[in-house]
Amino acid sequence: MTLRTRLTLVAAAVVAVVVAAASVTTYFVMRHELYSQVDNTISDHAGNIQRNPDFALRGFNAFVGDYTTLVNTGGQAVGQLPVDKRVRQVAAGHRNGFYRDTTVQGYSIREIVVPVPGFGAAVVGRDIGYLHHDLSRLRLILILVSLGGVLVAAIAGALVSRATLAPVRRLTAAAERISETGDPSERVPEGGRGELPRLATAFNTMLGALEDAIETQRRFVADASHELRTPLTSMQTNIEVLKQQERLDPAARLRLFEDLHREAHEMRDLIGGLLELARGDDPRLEKTTFRFDELVEREVERARSRFPALVFEAQLEQTTLTGSSDRLERAVWNLLENAGKWSTPGSSVEVTLAGGELRVRDHGPGIAEEDREHVFDRFYRSAAARALPGSGLGLAIVREVAEAHGGTVVAEDAPGGGAVLRLRLANS
Image (cartoon, rainbow, N blue to C red; front, side, top):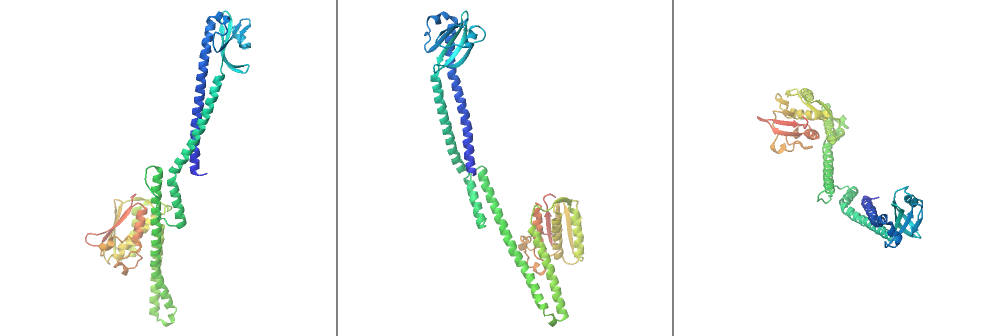
């Protein structure tokens, strides 16, 4: 059953319940009112007889439209209406008066039985066939009105649900087309207020994010293919040359093996960087609470071993973070390694952690102005960096890790020369 059909049925059901309740209430209110009018009339006539029973004995047709029967205390009756045990009990003073509906010779009669002091009891009745006829007509009218109301409600519900669900149909059609074509560039119309326009806006936002993700994935695959092709081609060339090693002198063979070792190392670093970027901000990564200053201290010790010709000076303030310690460890190492590559032997690298911000400052050549806004792009290598080993992924990984933790990383020129890179995380 479609949502439109369900909405139509719900609207019809709600109206049916409301109309039925209103119709039943109207019917019983009218019935009570009509019966009250009859009861008041025959009650007045019965009151006259109670006050003057001789008047009723002289003429039974004194009350136009009513039938009268008098019953003495001995149970003897005079009049047009039959009596039974209950009436004789009233006449004998054994029970109170009452109203009732009876049938006399096929006629519906509304009766009142009242005690008459000093005589017995009186029965006054009136033909209420007209009342039953009016109530039957009222029932028919109310049934027709109820059915008409339900029909109108169903039609109105169908029209309203059709108009209301039009944005949903557009979303469904767009989703089906995207599923068929694989192209998320399509958008659905927006506008208006309420939940459904907000749904359209959210759907378009989702499509935009999906389109960006697909485009990023395409660029990533293309860039990765391009970057992997160079070392693979070089390795393949060296292997082809080594196949003819009998023609090579020992020194040439050694250079080839060293080239292969270097290229394999570059391949390993490149693949490791690609895997790190591929993880992105995966929410399934395990997050823990840890001492960030201790993590930075370990990486500084590692950098001192990796770059023994440099002096790493660390001033670390106690800092606690919640996040992925493995990824932050990789980001910190990439910052330190970047500073180590650009520093001249004998210079220093200053590492400061204070106020939740990690600063890594080197005393190298600094960052050219035209390169500053690109140093965190994937696979970007400035003209000066092409002479150094690396894949162009180190700082891109730092930015990915920072954004995954709700933070930022920026590169600036340091006073007096060199560069300073500042990493700030959201929960630091």
